[in-house]
Image 1 (tube, each protein chain N blue to C red):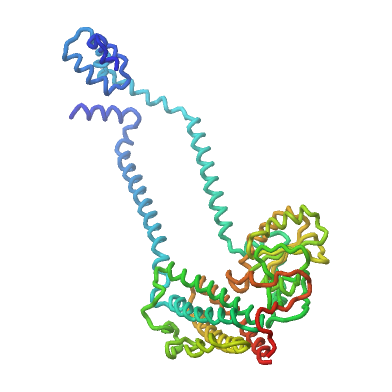
Image 2: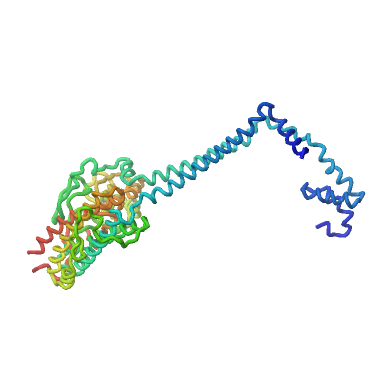
Length: 272
Length: 222
């Protein structure tokens, strides 16, 4: 830009001498020599003499001292990268583990499918009150009707005869001891509301404040803040279904009360 | 020409000891060859990884594809029967099991159709139905084992009152028996883990439902 200003020929030498790019400077210096301007010579001469001093390249030996800085940097970056990749691989490996392996890894979980498989057997639907080996029950005989489990939060005890049918369909049933502090109940309800294949109700006679059920699995905890609750739901909801992932949680019983109900009549009376 | 040669020599002379001079280019070739081999090896491994699932997935005439297509047809009729019963049956337990069968089997249809897509196969086969079954189970009037014929379906749709329950229970019982026969054929011949898993769930579910259907038949008689 300064070249375009008046007095160009005089300023040229200064431009050449300050030229930071040697490639650009070289042709300029050559042109100067051709034009024969005496003022240009002093600036051009150091460049022209550049051919002689090849020797300055020799001090390659200087590099023999270890440059610890870059090495440390590379090692640090390498360790960091390996850490990130390693964690990613580990996390995806954990995530891809089969659900039953993950469920079995939950501390304190009882796997009745493994320890007492026959207690889950049943012939066909049964009406009327039923009894089970585990409390709350985790599988086995059940009513023809299931309890709605579309993220339903029941504020009173429900009939296990219906809830076990929900478990068969892949629901996780959260039960808690009546009298559990309201903030704890609210925390549990927050994990259920709006989440299909879950339901929650108080349950009389629990030996722990909170108990979680899936078909063939049970976990009892003291506190709604226990992180194993989320693990249990994540690993067993839908997965624990005996009838596949699309077994229904709607069109079932929505009423509370521990006496199993007959399904509501809808149309013609069954007398015939 | 001579000038560059001398500069090269100068350059080499500075770091290298004379007897290493000859070896330097050879080892450089060795490193290059090794690098090429590693890259080619990685590419081959990658190609193998890409191709293996493609080559090992079920083909158009496979048992898995036949099962997925024919069981879709079979299930589709069960869904129709069940929705009729859900709408019109008298016994609440019959309506309850009917809606359970309808949504469950429609869900399984979704899974089987997804297999076919993943295998790059058409939902429609070029082979006649049931040809994948090695025991030579027959198609009668275009119907697979256990399927209701058009007259039976029409009668179910037109039925009233407890007749809906009775006809549905009879048709669905036969339907499940035929279905389990087909599922057994698939279980015996496939080693595809996903097909095995779903087919086992199907079989267990239908076997339990057979018991419940039989119980309801007794109830609907009275």
